[in-house]
Image 1 (cartoon, rainbow, N blue to C red):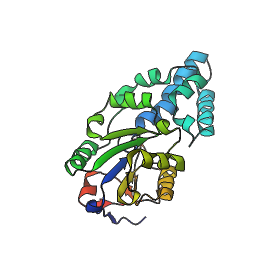
Image 2: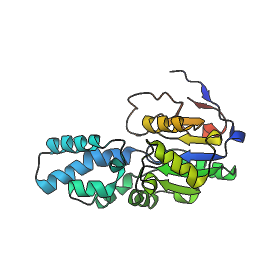
Image 3: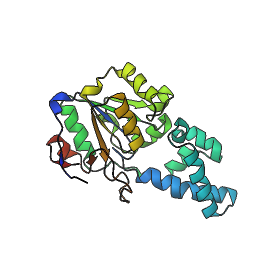
Image 4: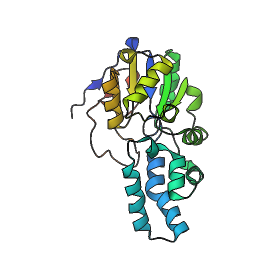
Amino acid sequence: MNKLPIQLDWDSIDTVLLDMDGTLLDLNFDFYFWTEHLPQKYSQIHNANINEVTDYIAHRLAEKQGQLEWYCTDYWSQQFQLNIIAAQTEIKHLISERAQVIEFLKTLGAMKKKRILITNSDRPSIALKFSNCALEPLLDQVISSHDYQAAKEQQQFWQQLQTDIDFNPQTALFIDDSEAVLDSAQQFGIKQLLSIKQPISTQLRELDSKYPMVENFLPLLTGNANG
């Protein structure tokens, strides 16, 4: 893949839309919870084989991928008959910002850019993350797709977002680690789109994005980031 520097014309950008999990926060917390911690808890509660439980949970999650339910902790609490947020709290020490994120957000604020978090995570998830990281004071607005009853993969989300915050897609930058979400944003007309090279710190990304991929955030401010 061509590794040309990502050149951003910051004079033409007034709004920076930012994903949370896998973009501002290391996705390792979520990955570990859904593939390791939750299967272990479920197998203990139901006295079930861990391998069978792991496959079962993965299958159930796959059925809802890209839909609002996939991101709803209340839904999965009901499906798996345990409190998802309480279970996630048990591994809250794994919640962490990605490298350079805090400095990046502070600089955007100094540049008078709107810093708007748009996430598919529900409000209980956001509250858990915010209570264990330093993001919240550095954001100008926080929007969950559950506020709109539409996931970011759907055009309805973007239509309601524009009505809600009155932003211009041509002067917005959006950073997200999900290809499907970036595709939806592109369809809506967001001009500047960036992906994340390594959303999970403990794993290499399986497939490159067709969008320029960010490895470190601060070089975006100087035009030296590779895409």
